[in-house]
Image (tube, rainbow, N blue to C red; front, side, top):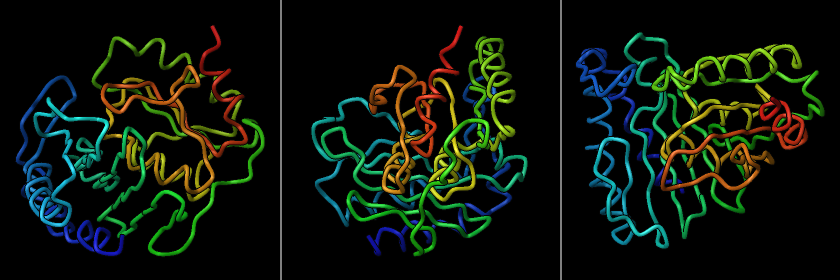
Length: 254
Protein backbone atom coordinates (compact mmCIF):
# COMPACT_ATOMS: atom_id res chain seq x y z
CA UNK A 1 0.00 0.00 0.00
CA UNK A 2 2.86 2.39 0.76
CA UNK A 3 4.25 2.06 -2.78
CA UNK A 4 0.79 2.71 -4.23
CA UNK A 5 0.37 5.84 -2.10
CA UNK A 6 3.82 7.08 -3.12
CA UNK A 7 2.99 6.51 -6.79
CA UNK A 8 -0.26 8.49 -6.60
CA UNK A 9 1.52 11.34 -4.80
CA UNK A 10 3.91 11.53 -7.76
CA UNK A 11 1.04 12.82 -9.93
CA UNK A 12 1.15 16.17 -8.12
CA UNK A 13 3.32 18.00 -10.65
CA UNK A 14 1.09 16.86 -13.51
CA UNK A 15 -2.12 17.79 -11.67
CA UNK A 16 -0.87 21.27 -10.73
CA UNK A 17 0.24 22.21 -14.26
CA UNK A 18 -2.11 25.13 -14.89
CA UNK A 19 -1.26 25.25 -18.59
CA UNK A 20 -2.36 21.65 -19.06
CA UNK A 21 -5.50 22.31 -17.01
CA UNK A 22 -6.60 24.80 -19.64
CA UNK A 23 -5.83 22.52 -22.59
CA UNK A 24 -9.44 21.34 -22.84
CA UNK A 25 -11.44 18.97 -25.02
CA UNK A 26 -15.23 19.08 -24.73
CA UNK A 27 -16.73 15.59 -24.51
CA UNK A 28 -20.34 16.66 -23.91
CA UNK A 29 -22.53 19.16 -22.11
CA UNK A 30 -20.58 20.25 -19.00
CA UNK A 31 -18.27 17.27 -19.63
CA UNK A 32 -14.60 18.06 -20.22
CA UNK A 33 -11.24 16.37 -20.43
CA UNK A 34 -7.97 18.26 -20.00
CA UNK A 35 -4.35 17.52 -20.74
CA UNK A 36 -4.01 16.95 -16.99
CA UNK A 37 -6.53 14.07 -17.08
CA UNK A 38 -4.64 12.42 -19.93
CA UNK A 39 -1.26 13.12 -18.33
CA UNK A 40 -2.20 11.52 -15.00
CA UNK A 41 -3.58 8.44 -16.77
CA UNK A 42 -0.51 8.08 -18.99
CA UNK A 43 1.73 8.40 -15.92
CA UNK A 44 -0.11 5.86 -13.75
CA UNK A 45 -1.13 3.14 -16.21
CA UNK A 46 2.31 1.80 -17.23
CA UNK A 47 3.63 1.99 -13.68
CA UNK A 48 0.64 0.13 -12.26
CA UNK A 49 0.97 -2.51 -14.97
CA UNK A 50 4.62 -2.96 -14.04
CA UNK A 51 3.80 -3.25 -10.33
CA UNK A 52 0.67 -5.41 -10.80
CA UNK A 53 0.88 -7.09 -14.22
CA UNK A 54 -2.15 -9.32 -13.63
CA UNK A 55 -4.59 -6.49 -12.79
CA UNK A 56 -6.88 -5.07 -15.49
CA UNK A 57 -7.43 -1.35 -15.94
CA UNK A 58 -10.63 0.72 -16.08
CA UNK A 59 -10.38 4.49 -16.49
CA UNK A 60 -12.64 7.37 -17.45
CA UNK A 61 -10.39 8.30 -20.36
CA UNK A 62 -10.04 4.88 -22.07
CA UNK A 63 -12.08 2.15 -23.75
CA UNK A 64 -13.21 -0.19 -20.99
CA UNK A 65 -14.88 -2.86 -23.11
CA UNK A 66 -13.74 -6.42 -22.49
CA UNK A 67 -12.93 -6.06 -18.80
CA UNK A 68 -13.58 -9.23 -16.80
CA UNK A 69 -15.29 -7.97 -13.63
CA UNK A 70 -14.72 -11.32 -11.90
CA UNK A 71 -11.00 -10.56 -11.77
CA UNK A 72 -8.98 -7.73 -10.25
CA UNK A 73 -9.46 -4.31 -11.83
CA UNK A 74 -7.89 -0.92 -11.22
CA UNK A 75 -10.55 1.80 -11.45
CA UNK A 76 -9.05 5.23 -12.13
CA UNK A 77 -10.46 8.70 -12.42
CA UNK A 78 -7.33 10.66 -13.37
CA UNK A 79 -8.97 13.89 -12.23
CA UNK A 80 -12.30 13.72 -10.41
CA UNK A 81 -13.55 17.28 -10.52
CA UNK A 82 -12.31 18.34 -13.96
CA UNK A 83 -14.65 21.36 -14.11
CA UNK A 84 -13.23 22.47 -10.75
CA UNK A 85 -9.73 22.06 -12.18
CA UNK A 86 -10.53 24.23 -15.20
CA UNK A 87 -11.83 26.98 -12.90
CA UNK A 88 -8.95 26.65 -10.39
CA UNK A 89 -11.49 25.75 -7.70
CA UNK A 90 -8.89 23.52 -6.01
CA UNK A 91 -11.28 20.69 -5.20
CA UNK A 92 -10.10 17.98 -7.60
CA UNK A 93 -8.61 14.57 -6.91
CA UNK A 94 -6.76 11.65 -8.41
CA UNK A 95 -8.98 8.69 -7.52
CA UNK A 96 -7.62 5.14 -7.79
CA UNK A 97 -9.43 2.07 -6.49
CA UNK A 98 -9.17 -1.67 -6.97
CA UNK A 99 -12.02 -4.14 -7.43
CA UNK A 100 -11.58 -7.82 -6.70
CA UNK A 101 -14.49 -9.88 -8.07
CA UNK A 102 -16.64 -6.76 -8.04
CA UNK A 103 -15.76 -5.69 -4.48
CA UNK A 104 -13.77 -2.50 -3.69
CA UNK A 105 -10.72 -3.72 -1.78
CA UNK A 106 -8.51 -0.62 -1.70
CA UNK A 107 -8.62 3.05 -2.56
CA UNK A 108 -6.40 6.12 -2.78
CA UNK A 109 -7.85 9.61 -3.26
CA UNK A 110 -5.40 12.49 -3.51
CA UNK A 111 -6.14 16.21 -3.64
CA UNK A 112 -2.83 17.73 -4.83
CA UNK A 113 -4.01 21.28 -4.05
CA UNK A 114 -4.33 20.56 -0.31
CA UNK A 115 -1.82 17.67 -0.27
CA UNK A 116 -4.45 15.52 1.47
CA UNK A 117 -4.25 11.83 0.60
CA UNK A 118 -6.94 9.41 1.76
CA UNK A 119 -6.23 5.69 1.65
CA UNK A 120 -7.67 2.37 2.72
CA UNK A 121 -7.38 -1.34 2.09
CA UNK A 122 -10.08 -3.82 3.02
CA UNK A 123 -9.78 -4.82 6.67
CA UNK A 124 -6.94 -2.38 7.31
CA UNK A 125 -8.73 0.84 8.27
CA UNK A 126 -8.90 4.25 6.57
CA UNK A 127 -6.33 7.02 6.74
CA UNK A 128 -5.72 10.66 5.90
CA UNK A 129 -2.01 11.37 5.37
CA UNK A 130 -1.24 8.30 7.46
CA UNK A 131 -3.50 9.16 10.41
CA UNK A 132 -6.53 6.98 11.12
CA UNK A 133 -9.92 8.50 10.27
CA UNK A 134 -13.48 7.71 11.30
CA UNK A 135 -16.95 8.89 10.32
CA UNK A 136 -18.91 11.34 12.47
CA UNK A 137 -21.27 10.40 15.30
CA UNK A 138 -24.27 12.32 13.93
CA UNK A 139 -27.38 10.25 14.60
CA UNK A 140 -30.03 12.14 12.62
CA UNK A 141 -30.35 14.34 9.55
CA UNK A 142 -31.25 17.26 11.80
CA UNK A 143 -27.70 17.32 13.17
CA UNK A 144 -26.00 16.51 9.86
CA UNK A 145 -24.19 18.43 7.13
CA UNK A 146 -25.10 16.89 3.78
CA UNK A 147 -23.10 17.09 0.55
CA UNK A 148 -25.04 16.93 -2.71
CA UNK A 149 -24.33 16.38 -6.38
CA UNK A 150 -26.24 17.96 -9.25
CA UNK A 151 -25.52 15.42 -12.04
CA UNK A 152 -24.21 18.23 -14.26
CA UNK A 153 -24.04 16.09 -17.41
CA UNK A 154 -27.77 15.39 -17.12
CA UNK A 155 -29.52 18.74 -16.96
CA UNK A 156 -32.86 16.97 -17.54
CA UNK A 157 -32.61 15.71 -13.93
CA UNK A 158 -32.49 19.25 -12.51
CA UNK A 159 -36.09 19.44 -11.26
CA UNK A 160 -35.96 16.04 -9.54
CA UNK A 161 -32.47 16.65 -8.12
CA UNK A 162 -33.25 20.07 -6.72
CA UNK A 163 -36.48 18.81 -5.16
CA UNK A 164 -34.35 16.27 -3.26
CA UNK A 165 -31.77 18.91 -2.38
CA UNK A 166 -34.52 21.16 -1.01
CA UNK A 167 -35.81 18.34 1.19
CA UNK A 168 -32.29 17.61 2.42
CA UNK A 169 -31.67 21.29 3.12
CA UNK A 170 -34.86 21.56 5.20
CA UNK A 171 -34.20 18.33 7.12
CA UNK A 172 -30.48 18.86 7.81
CA UNK A 173 -28.27 21.56 9.28
CA UNK A 174 -27.18 22.64 5.78
CA UNK A 175 -26.02 21.33 2.40
CA UNK A 176 -22.71 21.59 0.53
CA UNK A 177 -21.63 21.03 -3.09
CA UNK A 178 -17.93 20.39 -3.76
CA UNK A 179 -17.97 19.04 -7.35
CA UNK A 180 -15.96 15.86 -6.75
CA UNK A 181 -17.72 12.65 -5.76
CA UNK A 182 -14.43 11.12 -4.60
CA UNK A 183 -13.83 14.04 -2.25
CA UNK A 184 -17.43 13.95 -0.99
CA UNK A 185 -17.01 10.31 0.04
CA UNK A 186 -13.67 11.03 1.73
CA UNK A 187 -15.13 14.00 3.60
CA UNK A 188 -17.72 11.66 5.09
CA UNK A 189 -14.94 9.20 5.94
CA UNK A 190 -13.07 11.79 8.00
CA UNK A 191 -16.20 13.28 9.62
CA UNK A 192 -16.32 16.63 7.84
CA UNK A 193 -19.77 15.92 6.40
CA UNK A 194 -22.30 13.27 7.36
CA UNK A 195 -24.07 12.27 4.13
CA UNK A 196 -24.11 12.61 0.35
CA UNK A 197 -26.19 11.77 -2.69
CA UNK A 198 -25.79 12.05 -6.44
CA UNK A 199 -27.42 10.42 -9.47
CA UNK A 200 -25.77 8.80 -12.50
CA UNK A 201 -22.24 8.60 -11.21
CA UNK A 202 -19.75 6.38 -13.01
CA UNK A 203 -17.76 3.59 -11.29
CA UNK A 204 -14.52 5.62 -11.43
CA UNK A 205 -16.27 8.41 -9.50
CA UNK A 206 -16.89 6.26 -6.44
CA UNK A 207 -14.92 2.97 -6.36
CA UNK A 208 -11.92 4.31 -4.40
CA UNK A 209 -14.13 6.47 -2.18
CA UNK A 210 -16.35 3.51 -1.30
CA UNK A 211 -13.33 1.48 -0.18
CA UNK A 212 -12.17 4.37 2.01
CA UNK A 213 -15.56 5.27 3.47
CA UNK A 214 -16.50 1.71 4.38
CA UNK A 215 -13.18 1.24 6.17
CA UNK A 216 -13.92 4.44 8.10
CA UNK A 217 -17.22 2.96 9.32
CA UNK A 218 -19.57 4.53 6.81
CA UNK A 219 -22.20 3.20 4.42
CA UNK A 220 -22.58 3.51 0.64
CA UNK A 221 -25.49 2.09 -1.35
CA UNK A 222 -27.49 2.64 -4.48
CA UNK A 223 -30.66 4.61 -3.80
CA UNK A 224 -32.65 1.38 -3.62
CA UNK A 225 -30.40 0.24 -0.77
CA UNK A 226 -28.50 -2.30 -2.87
CA UNK A 227 -24.84 -2.41 -3.92
CA UNK A 228 -23.77 0.19 -6.51
CA UNK A 229 -22.79 -1.13 -9.92
CA UNK A 230 -19.12 -1.22 -10.82
CA UNK A 231 -19.72 -1.75 -14.54
CA UNK A 232 -22.36 0.92 -15.25
CA UNK A 233 -23.60 4.22 -13.77
CA UNK A 234 -25.35 4.24 -10.37
CA UNK A 235 -27.37 6.62 -8.22
CA UNK A 236 -25.47 6.81 -4.93
CA UNK A 237 -26.22 7.57 -1.29
CA UNK A 238 -23.44 7.64 1.29
CA UNK A 239 -23.36 8.42 4.98
CA UNK A 240 -21.76 7.83 8.35
CA UNK A 241 -24.04 4.78 8.61
CA UNK A 242 -26.14 6.06 11.50
CA UNK A 243 -28.26 8.34 9.31
CA UNK A 244 -28.35 6.10 6.25
CA UNK A 245 -31.91 4.81 6.51
CA UNK A 246 -33.25 8.31 7.15
CA UNK A 247 -31.20 9.70 4.27
CA UNK A 248 -32.48 7.07 1.82
CA UNK A 249 -36.09 7.56 2.94
CA UNK A 250 -35.93 11.28 2.37
CA UNK A 251 -34.20 10.98 -1.01
CA UNK A 252 -36.77 8.45 -2.24
CA UNK A 253 -39.82 10.29 -0.84
CA UNK A 254 -42.33 11.43 -3.46
